[in-house]
Length: 348
Image (cartoon, rainbow, N blue to C red; front, top):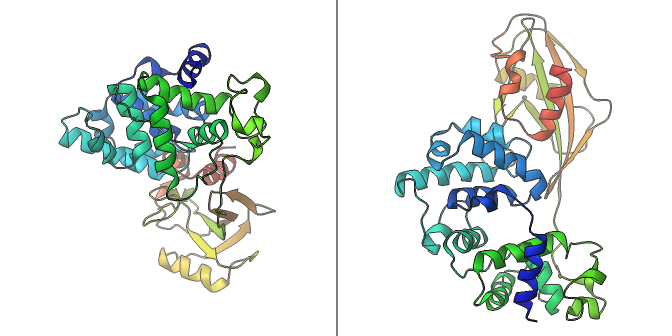
């Protein structure tokens, strides 16, 4: 039995029911693929349902305010995906009159849509023979066929795409791509896969040569930057506080935060002149007292950054120009670590 037939038969038996599979419209598939980048399906499903509920059509997503989109995305991470989602919705609405382009190169040119996402849309929605290659597909191909080309070098994508493309020939492309991803997600998992019950165990090079834990190969080590963040939660006598929108490039762009001092060494405390500068920047002239909220630093890990975070409660003795009511703070999209603080400090 061919690889293709085995895989598709397995998919028929193990196919998970997802709403974007029941309604394989380009908008739905595109939305699901953007959400599921760097995200497990179980985690992404409620976000998908929330977006579809709020924006059933691409025109509504295009017309939405960015803060609304960021609020719905809150907690999902990799927030550039949400900004690109909004930008692409506007392009589809304005340039393509609300209809998703069918040409592969035009799909691929959309903001936030690379070869993988374009291949998924083109194959699932339009039946085009474009193989997808994601982390699951890399793993399946590397193990079954004993491919030892490192997957984190620039030449890898082309090599693995050509292999997947060859295996796809003549198959229903959308089902084949989904089957490859599903097999990697459910059967050929990263750690301790159940190889004894695998449909490919007799031909799997990694299993036969005891290399399952060694494939796929990665050669690069992720460089991690340590950062030390001190957030200052200003509260005046009218129960108002101050939020800032993060601007410029970097993590959490366009999300809201409390005024921040970043120290570039592991310091338990900020410097007095740093706080004085922060207060002057926001034209705060009132006397105040500062208390540390968390006894121990809060650690928050991102892909390339490890954050050590402290929150400081600054109580102002006089009325000020703080413009955010504590009762409205829930309305602002924030990074997950700030959401957790907000929910504990302002709500409980």
